[in-house]
Length: 154
Image (cartoon, rainbow, N blue to C red; front, side):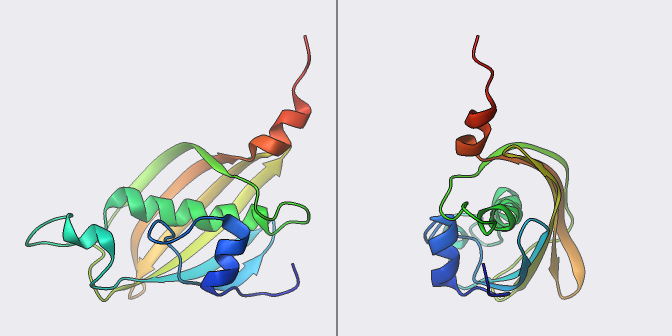
């Protein structure tokens, strides 16, 4: 990857996740195999606001964590020969949901790939709204295509 930022079309090209489930609007800075910084602008017509919750619409905690996972996955799929590979979440720990994320908010997402070996990654991510911590988690990811190359045949 030669660029340091990605628009939504480029994100889709790397992740192969499409709206409405894509939880990232733009990547401001990416260092493949290391870290990502991105933005999700919450709009009135985002599908989840219609059902979560009537009279108190806010971004579901699970989707906040999904935005972190998608960002960490970008750290992996932007490495050489990984474009378009499937990335799965395997674990999520130390989840903190500190602030409601509302219509009109801008979620600033930061993720770090703490370790990456043989298709298995450990990650940390945080989301901020107006410079205040809104969510964070430690989580594990895998790329099955890579991991399968290291299976021991018995």
